[in-house]
Image 1 (spheres, one colour):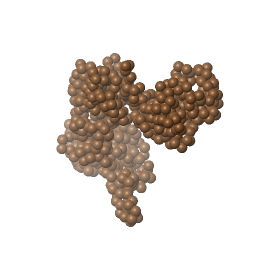
Image 2 (tube, rainbow, N blue to C red; image 1 turned 90 degrees about the vertical axis):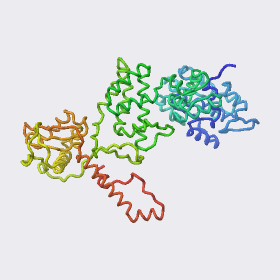
Image 3 (cartoon, rainbow, N blue to C red; image 1 turned 120 degrees about the horizontal axis):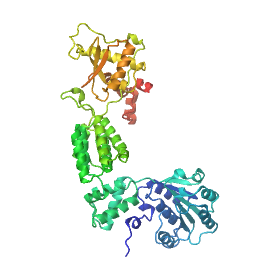
Image 4 (cartoon, rainbow, N blue to C red; image 1 turned 180 degrees about the horizontal axis):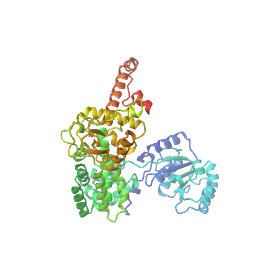
Length: 566
């Protein structure tokens, strides 16, 4: 007997067998049960998600006569009556499928419409199904408009397309439109498990997850890949063989690369990429798997749990604790954009190496041992052992409207120790310098004198030393401390404060404490705590909670000054 591929053998015969399209099944089922039937339906969505299948099930529902031949319109076609069996076999005379990809002209459409004047021969309704309807010519679309708008009562149109943007609005307005969704990898994997169990084929869960991801939301693609995996594995579907068949990268390779990036070890990055080249591991597949792992990391950092159906191994959890959330976001963006660069490079492995080295160039400065300022803070809602949350973008607090000249400006103090070899004296009173620098930065920022990286450098730095010839700032970010931003900040300070031409600004990289940004964050946190305390202690709120079971939604409380600023 001729083998029937899984995608055809397990094509759903009823709405109950449809997978991942519950919103369409519910709407059509309700319409069929109440006999509130539209004359034209448009099903849109990517390939292999059930557009043609829904059309055939709808045709059976409209024409089913039941096992006893006495049935009517139903949302559960019997599958045994002559109409159901003929539609499944593709020989029902009152159900016509037209492939607009190869029959796109006006002549083909007119030939189809000529059949509309004749009543059904076998069934209750004539059903015209036009697949890939967006491929029709404009003349063909115009030819069908009148019939599509006012068809005979016994005629139903079903249109399907993967590109609804190319369908004229005059056609869209005449149809009831349903958008079939791409299926989630877990949904695809679960369905594959049922199909392979029915076939008596052994399948490992990890292999099914790989097939579910490779299908890109298409159940037909997933079943076709399953056929290929069965042949490749000699009758079994195993993870190692499916990974080799798909060219997928082992997660251990990706976690090792990310660990090297997290440790700042460029030599390890190059060595690992060379080893992957020797093993024939694809660069594009590596970046794709890296993006998947980084997505897992980000969800783990912000929620304390791995994404549903994707258990995080110990190596991934360790990375989540080591990498800062903002660094994870940067790495994710680099992985996505890096895939587009592979085709431009003469060597895809060289391009992969450059993507990873680029990630190293943006890595934050390693924290100094024992520094209390580098302790991670868990994001809102994350577990206590989750990694640090990103520091919110600092916004200047309210600054009194006084002239710029009235802002305290750090000046040379005769009581300072003598300058060091660098020519800049060490700070003799860190608290006073921090106060003066924070006031100066806030005033310059409020006056609009600080922009972009210059603003970030000023906010993320603290003044640690000064003399008549220059000031020295300390910043924790090597990226912000680069010469470009430093020179622009020096120009702003010299211009606004009237400093001499010989005056210079230096920026050293190191742990920066009591920066303007940290002060702003502390002030915002204090305002937030005060606002939450005010709400919790409000008598009206307490009465609502006591008498009506009211609940204060987490994250919904904002200080009035912050809300007004927004």
